[in-house]
Every structure is written in C-alpha cells, then in structure tokens.
Image (cartoon, rainbow over all chains, first blue to last red; front, side, top):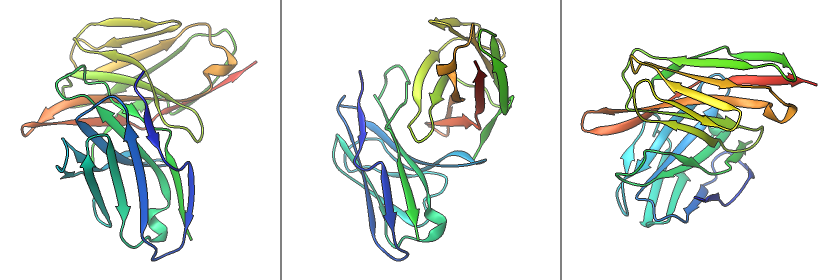
Amino acid sequence: DVKVTQSSRYLVKRTGEKVFLECVQDMDHENMFWYRQDPGLGLRLIYFSYDVKMKEKGDIPEGYSVSREKKERFSLILESASTNQTSMYLCASRVLGGDEKLFFGSGTQLSVL
Amino acid sequence: GQQLNQSPQSMFIQEGEDVSMNCTSSSIFNTWLWYKQDPGEGPVLLIALYKAGELTSNGRLTAQFGITRKDSFLNISASIPSDVGIYFCAGQLRTSGTYKYIFGTGTRLKVLA
C-alpha cells in the first residue's frame, strides 16, 4: 500500500512564526500536492510538484512556499504564519502516467494563534 | 477554485439501510475518485473509476461513472456504524496541458444503530 506520511498531526504556532510542514511518500511517486481543507470550502490546492525541484502554484499559493529537494519529500512552508492559515493541511501523491489515483496523508491540523 | 456539486450534504440513516450520494459537474472528467474521511484524519481512497458507464464495487460500496462523464454516484449497501464519516468525490480533468483534481464538498454520513 502507498504510504504518505505527514510529520505532525497537530501543530500550534504563533502569528509571524515560520512553519514547516513535511510530507514523505514511499512509493517513488513523481507528483506531490499540498491542499488545505476548511469547513464549507472543501479541498483547495496550494502547490504541487511534478518532480524533484519542480513546483507549480495551485489555486491559493499566497503566503506559502514549497520545497522538493528529494523525490520522496515535499515540504510546505508558511513564511510568516497568520491566523487565517489555521486549517487542516493535506499532502497527497500520485504516480506520473499511472492510474490517476491520488493518495493522501493523515493531515496536519495547524492552529495559528 | 472549482468545486463539484455533491449531494446530499449530510444524512442520518438507520443501520442496515442503503445510502446513495452523487456528484455533478459542468466539466467532463477523465477519472472519478471516491474517498472517505474520518474526523481528524486524511481521506482514504475507496474507489476509482476510469470509463463512462463503469460500475465498480468495493465490498458494500458501489460507484458508477456517469455516461455523460459529468457525474458519479456512490452507493453503500446495508450500512453499519463504522460507515460514519465524510465521503467526497474527486474528478480529474485535463486542462491547458496539465491535469487537475476537483473535489466535492462532501457528504457527512451518520448511522444510527
């Protein structure tokens, strides 16, 4: 089974802090994604990466950046956390040219105070 | 970003009853995915659909790819208490040379024992 692991289940940070959310997948998937999930808004794409060192903005990239130095790891960075970034963050991966299945991690519930 | 119309938004049912939910869109999709999400957890893939008209089962779950490729349905037969959770659909489409996943807003299912 595909395993997508997010390093933290719960995080509490203060406004202005730099926050790193880490995601690792063990299936050699080329494509990785970061979404945020908010009640009533569903899943919204923040950034995605086709492959190592490649990144593309999603629908709501403002206030975020990403890093993909190794194929298995995709990091989401909040440069200066704000209260409106309190959310559930979900990482996902899929294999390029495969069966189109998107696999999610368990999520990180981030609270910014 | 885009969202799929998913209905119903929530439902309470008695244990043993069958459940139906659906997603509709104005866009044509190449792939439909159905997920279940438990509170505080990441979404878990239930069923993937690839062709118009396709009907696929996973235990008590059955999903169909609509003929128009703009909708999909999920049925759960003989519901049990552990079916409680949020179910949501995702459609994949190709646009501007790339692909996107569009998500439904979810159906919250509660099963009364």
